[in-house]
Image 1 (cartoon, rainbow, N blue to C red):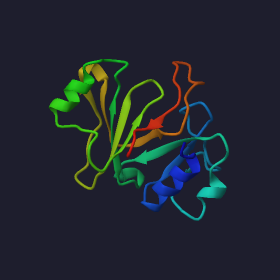
Image 2 (cartoon, rainbow, N blue to C red):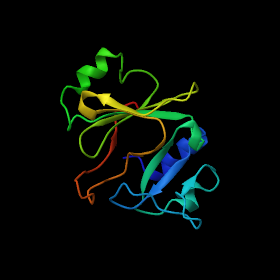
Image 3 (cartoon, one colour):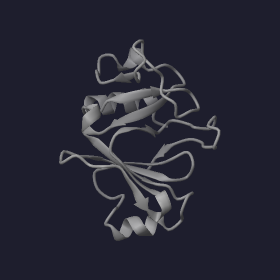
Image 4 (cartoon, rainbow, N blue to C red):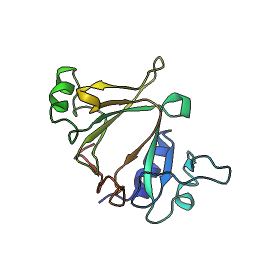
Length: 158
């Protein structure tokens, strides 16, 4: 299993800011100023990330990240995978792709284009274009979330 520290180092080295979240939860830690506790400096990652923390990927140019994501929440609607395939979405190629703690999928892409707007209109909200904020990433575990969850896992070769 790949450690949260290893993942954080890899992402920050690729100019993708990361976010500390409470163990077992999706909720971010706050820094001394009350903002999200993020890191974008490869030299600080090891001292910044605490044992047991969940890890998030910061999304969207407005947040200083070159990454957007696509959430496919199969637990909300089983048809979302077919819907995504019809749109040309694939797990093939150069993406970060993971299985979420509730059994869905998230695919992350580098994006350098016009500003996008979040869209959850497909498949009764199970298709979620993630363009700002953050998304929890593997190897996080959301087993303490009130609505349930579990471990996040990177898909093989992603």
